[in-house]
Every structure is written in structure tokens, then in C-alpha cells.
Image (cartoon, rainbow, N blue to C red):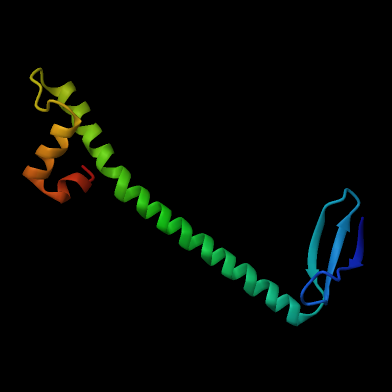
Length: 109
């Protein structure tokens, strides 16, 4: 059961706050202008979330992928041959950069 009350703290002053019997509240626009303002605000927040997630994912890929590439190179060399091709992670990264360039660090296979 919901008990609608006027919410004077809303900047549109036309919103209704709906209080559930359990004490949780939610804001519901009372007219179309307030509904439009609320939906635009929500759309902007969703766009900000999308942009933040895109930037975070790109940064993680640019920073984390080279480490994973070096790790896979060290694991595959250790399993396939008895002679050590790389002396360590820095040597693996250095040799990859010298032989294959920057593309070698970011290649998938």
C-alpha cells in the first residue's frame, strides 16, 4: 500500500513522493513537465555511466593487456621447450618490443 504525500523539497514543486508501507520512498512526477525533466536527468546520468564505463574499459585494456601478453609468452615458452628463451618478464617484454614492435604487445594470438 502506498501513501502519496506532497514533497515540498523537490525543485519542481510538482512531484509527489510515494511512501511504501515498509518505509521506502520513491519520487513520481506529478505533471508532464516534471516527468520530462526527470527523464532527461536520468538519461544524462545513464550517458555519464556509459561514458565512464567506456573510458575505464579502454584504460584497463591499454594498461592490462601488455602484462597479460608477457605472462602468456612466459607460460607458453616454459611449456613448449626445455631451453629458456626469456630470462624474465622484463626480458620477454623487451624482446617482444624489439622483434614485433608495439603491435606485438597488443596482439591477440
